[in-house]
Image: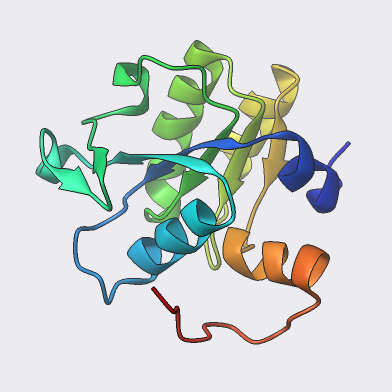
Length: 144
């Protein structure tokens, strides 16, 4: 598949790895945005485990999420992607999505071998805007 528009149309449950409770961080802005457009987002951050980010309980790792996850969206350095990819395979997610600037060849091979979609170096928020709202700007101000 690897059609981003189709992925964002079909899959609505996102585990967001590396999301922060700092409202100025890109990960938090992206989480809030995806929630606004109907996505269920599960924040994953071992340092914030047990807290809430944007109203959602934070898990320490994606394997702690009780619900079925479609997309694992990663805001962590490229060298952490392989370990995350192993968890993606374990939970049988549909897509491993690495945010802007994040790439990992080993993670890519592992998930593709397990018939999981792989997207790298793309922002979920920017792709959603491009395909569904026809907006190209990076970070417009969010209105509450």
